[in-house]
Amino acid sequence: MKRTLTLGFVLCGLMPLPCLAADTAKLPEVTVAACQAPVKVDGLLDEPCWQSARPLTDFRVLGLDEIARDTTVRLTYDSAWLYVAVACEHPSPPALKPGNFDHDGAVHTDESVEVFIDPGTDGRCYFHLKLNCANVKAEQRAGRDGWREPKWDSPWRSATRIHETGWNAEMAIPLYVLASHGDLKKTRMNVTRNKVVPEIDRQGVIVSEKRQLTTWAPVLKTFHEPDRFGALNGMDVANLEVPFLAGFENARISSYYVADGKYCYDVLLDVRGHNDKSGKATVTVLDQPVAGKESRLSREVEVKGMKSQPIRLPVAVDSPSQRKATVMMTEAETGATFRLARIVETSALNLMSVYLDRTYYTTEEQAVAVCSLGLPDDALRATKLVATDDKGKVLGETQEASRETQVPMKIKALDVGSHSVNIQWQQKDGRLIFSQKLTLIKRPPKPGLEWKIDKISKVILRDGRPFFPCGLI
Image (cartoon, rainbow, N blue to C red; front, top):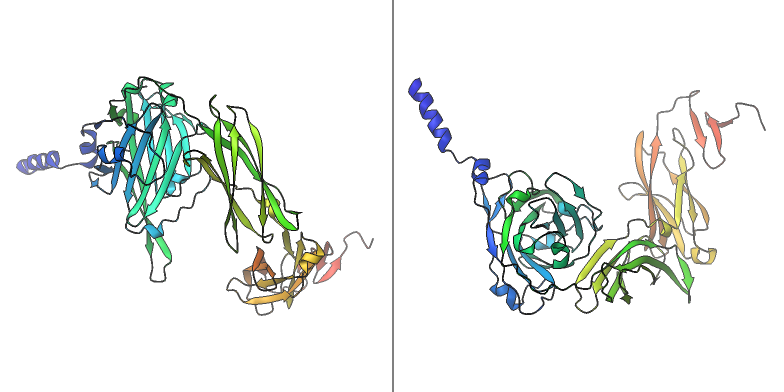
């Protein structure tokens, strides 16, 4: 028994425990060479400086003693920027469908990369930049004591590009921002990747996702371990330049209006620079109707230092309908992206509100969807309303809509329970304008105990008849 225990302790001591292996791993170092000409941040990664930069390929799977070699990072710099190129191999690039388009949103849950930079502060303050494969960003300042500043919002350039074997991320980070917090010669860094591989069935439907987190520096439990970042050597910038940086905030949309015989809505935002440099930026609106083709509208803007200026971009549309609007700001000269964000609040464009005539139903053969539509009567004559169940079966429709329209729906055949009803406002040719889902509740009949609310007449119903607890008024 004594020999067995001794042998057991010896074997345990020899086993390659993942955490122990990572804990004793040597912290990486890389000498970063300066580039001779500014890098064009376009996601192609085809500049000569990228070909000569040292590739960083051995990424560790977070929490495991396992190496992944499907991510390659290259670094270079000039007098204004630290450039980061990340080439990400992926088994199914067409399946890369990010779900986050909000600036400072949860972009790390998509296929994405993250960059952590400590400009020589020993972890007291480091910068955390995220970029998903759709070129949507998030950034914050952080510290080794666990503090986070997610509202820190300094612009940086970026571009992404999806190709046959994966996707590329390209970033340009302003050196003067880093230098203002520490010493560039003592810069430490980590680059990580959030790899997302969808599992797709034979019908082409995504049924699940496989995720893998990998890291260049040997962090142990989380990416936020600045004491384990790798060292960047050679960052010797003699004449630091401050580049033009711009961004926007408070992006919003107006309601529809008619101008020159066409429906329009406005995209409104506040534009400003993030230092005293002035320059030109291009603001682009991507208009995405729920049905129909996407369109783009661009406008060049003169950004004058840190002075905020309101910008209005009128967007003409073929027809008023549900839509999404995404705003992108790029540097006019280079085309590199400063910021990209989808406008989340679009209720100003809602032209339809719908409610059901009763709180629930029992023996009724039909329900009524009451629709309020926000277009002139002459525009409504070419539209109709259709009600369907959750399987697309038509429950009722009206062939001509008006500003206040009631859509009767046959519900006798519906089972007891909750049912999703979709009210669709369509053009006469079937093109969708708006849709809204309602929940219709059907309960077993209880004669003598049925209390409902008639929402049209705004009265209480007892067994289907108006009930006035204080008498008739």
